[in-house]
Image (cartoon, rainbow, N blue to C red; front, top):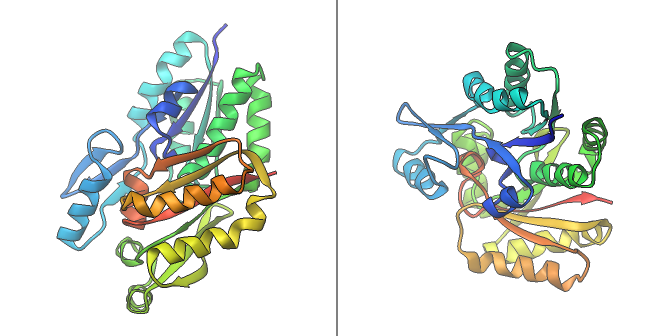
Length: 283
């Protein structure tokens, strides 16, 4: 009899240390620049993406994992008799979940359980780590699948973006709106709800002040959250801006674990530099 394997995609933005600790496998999405495709987290760095974007005044295209790539990941587990739980980026943002379903179908692999996280970045990562902990506690594949699927709407994922330029370039924001927001120094809070991104509070001012206001606004929700862990996930930015956010969370003296992660290529491509989010489960 095989084991239960947890697989996610590169948009989960989990560190190598976390992936190794929890024995999580990653299927990379693709980033296309100059008509050449790169595997997220393998062939290209977020810093290189920002440099390319600024030089070309456009945003790289991103693409779901290919079916051949998915089959390569699944085939060894089928041969080993493993169960696979795949937790992927929201199906409103990518077709990757469906690619996994099709790959399992082509392999005639019945023990593949696909969960649409209805989220992105460490909003996925939270679900992946919870699934891995349940696996390590001896829960069955079905129990894990049902629990993670049932709690998707308890994940709270939001980010403050420093500029709307990248979202506009990628067609996720109106160019006129982006120009106006940038002119007025507005830094909107992007919230993930029901698998889609929407705009919440619009902050104004310098990044350090905006991030302080952002976490202040969440204080009540943070103190009612699942206390096991909270993520601070950010794209390319001065780490001195990240430290006060982490310190704020430490001063709450509430969370068992505060984890910093850097956003990978896909999230960076769409949100741009100096984007920061605080992500957690509701209790």
